[in-house]
Image 1: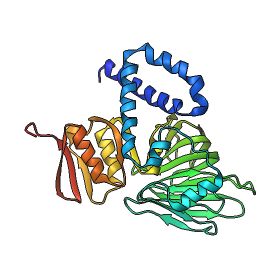
Image 2 (image 1 turned 90 degrees about the vertical axis):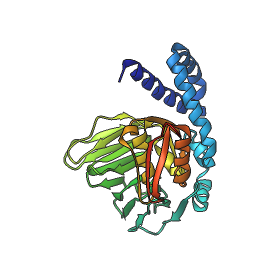
Image 3 (image 1 turned 60 degrees about the vertical axis):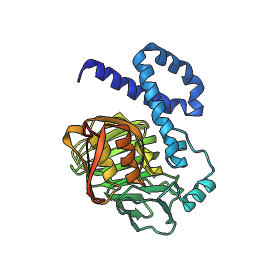
Image 4 (image 1 turned 45 degrees about the vertical axis):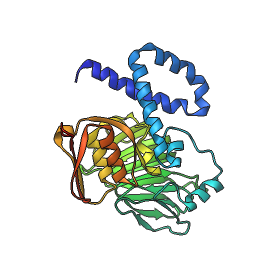
Length: 316
């Protein structure tokens, strides 16, 4: 990769972070002048800002809840309204469950399904597609065992002061009054991203590591990877969308495949193509149609259950 490409990519990531920051009404006034200095300092910053704004405009095609929450706008509704919203369903395709008396429950989702669960203590547990958990709530602790897939947790205060944690095969994630995501990968690792406050990562055979809001890290049973800046749009799946800014097509397709039965892949020659956009997860056919309409790609399919993204023919 040429140095100029590195500079453009860095500018794009900075533009994403500025977009999120400026949409936070509490911080926008103080940040505006700093953003103007950043924006005017380099033509690459201006090009990156235009690209992020274009992706933002595409959110109009996604569920309204995603457009209002994905780009950093906080929801300050009362707890009663939040619970009411969960009962009615948050976003297309999401089913909310009240589990106020279910202290040893298991919960799971099928491919393409997402589900919100209100835990016995009032915390929110959101399960992504093809995910599964078991609850362990007792007099001394609140623990969620992540068995597969990805979850989002928003913890509630506990009158008894019991610790809240997520157990994975690699160790434990201890919540410090927070909102965070945990997912498992096929390589035997756990990934954690913190949206609010902090967590402590406790690998079963390694040293602990604290993660704060805006950070992410992988950990194995032996060690924690050095924390890195969080992906600003990583939680967009919770409201039914996938927001991508300059990511490899192969990575985007791998994510979409979690929401679709059968095989979905891409040809090696286009796997590294950088793409941006906002794509619906509850209608992957529509997401694929958007991809091939915006980029030099085409779909090859035998049935709906075998689809491959390939370079567009010169004659097409």
